[in-house]
Amino acid sequence: MTPFDFDFLCKLLKERSGLVLTHEKEYLVENRLMPVVRRVGCATIAELIQRLKAPAADALKVEVTEAMMINESFFFRDKNPFDQFRDTILPELIEKRSKRRRIRLWSAAASSGQEPYSLAMMVASFSRLADWQIDIVATDISNEVLEKARAGIYSQFEVQRGLPIQMLMQHFEQVGEQWRISDKVRKMVQFRQHNLLTDLSVLGMFDVVFCRNVLIYFDQATKVDALERIRRQLAPDGYLILGAAETVVGLSDVFAPVPDKRGLYRPKPKPLAVAAVKPGAAGARVA
Amino acid sequence: MKRCLIIDDSSVIRKVARRILEGFGFAIVEASDGRQALDACRKDMPEAILLDWNMPVMDGYEFLRALRSMPGGDKPKVVFCTTENDLAHIARAMHAGADEYIMKPFDKEIVQAKFQEVGLL
Image (cartoon, rainbow over all chains, first blue to last red; front, side, top):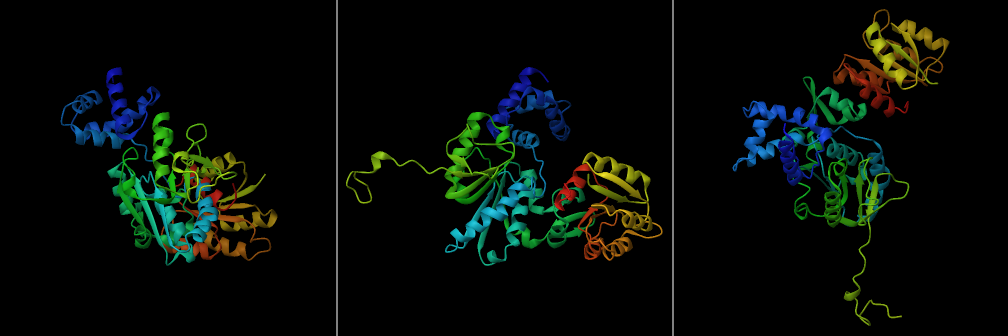
């Protein structure tokens, strides 16, 4: 691949998905794009990139972007965020939302569904939530992984990484060599194709946002932008959960880390607009 | 150092499991059937047991039932590791007192995840 082709690909991926590709990731380009090269009948990656430069290449651009996205996921990945969700966040929300009896969760890079299904299995274990409305919205940029997520069918290897055996027994059924998640859990999750870099307001407001291992692939400006837009969709007393290798510290001032809870962040209160408070107006303090 | 008893009639599986578990800091004892394993437990009860199902002399299921009824036999965390991959076998093993269940083939990440799940790592 020529440096010009690589730069073209970098620009395309950055525009489409926010993914920042560095030169040391050239091997990844070959790994991920060769199946696309074969599928569309090209001989080389260079030929594929020529096709991408043609005017009517939108469908191909989508396919290439999806192929390059990182989709590794497994059930209860990293364990700690799920322990915090079960032990800290859900009990707190059960108290705070006791009148509304509704909680909205967003898995912002759902990939093949393991994260939102892990949340659903955890919610299902809370008998106090049995008659609540729990919305679990799961989004990903890639339609291909969402199809797998919607089907809820996983290999033996996939169900063994992070999924306790008791949960496998409780929530899965065996289909030949594979395992299918129960209809009950599958129906708890709404999967939607969505790009984090586009308008998020269509997804509505959330109490908890899981956005793990996504920001690490963005450059600084894109991270800041994504965090600010996620903040707008999060309840003032809600939680943002980032991946173990991610932080907002030194990056954005719209979230603050929760002390002693690694990976958990809360929205910072918005500063009062001084001009909006007129001296002597109701509710305004006059010294 | 925590001790792990690897029980499998396949020397290849024992070798692979030993390499993985030594990497996690376990001292390893090996047995090739349930009876040998019970003798090893009477001598020195390990903290962890990785257990195959189908073995000559005494199979994994019989071993587990015998282990759980002997003095101190409730202490070790037992992780089944077997080609018996259907729900009925899993349920039977858990009912007999297993703590976790690995379906063969396995790799290092799966062993790590299961041992973490039961608090051995």
